[in-house]
Amino acid sequence: MPHDHDDSGPGAARLDRWLFGVRLFKSRSQASQAATGGKVHINGERVKPSHEVRPGDVVTFVRNLVEFECTVTAIPARRGPATEAARCYVETPASETRRAEFAQRMKIASGLAPQRPDERPDKHGRQALRRLRGRN
Image (cartoon, rainbow, N blue to C red; front, side, top):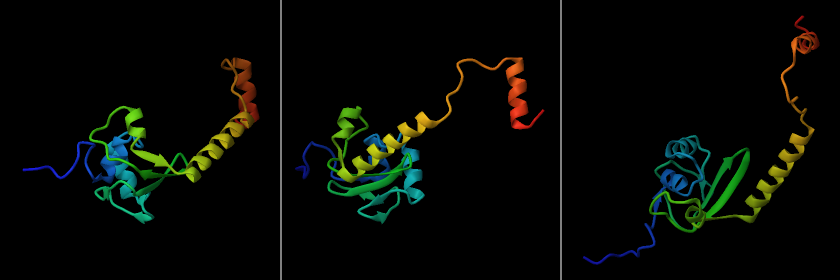
């Protein structure tokens, strides 16, 4: 019986398996929960974890408070190394810009946050902190 597909991998995959396979989520259950919770969209539509993903589909979800958008280019046969996984999708320029802006804002925010001292406060320092917080 002749095969109708080439050896470059399957033509479609479940959404949760694809998200896990291309390393966009650390576990398949996390990918499944995101899809079940309505956080993952394919071509602008809210979908279930079992929805099929095909090359050319646009997958969108929120990651680290930033909307991540990518176009599916391939379906991996297995969860392989990150370099292989990165070839299975192309992030949109708008998504890259959003991520860069978010990283810049976080860098600025971390610079403005109060720095922690190198060592723990001693007895007098703890007493001063309690007074400052109003806890005698």
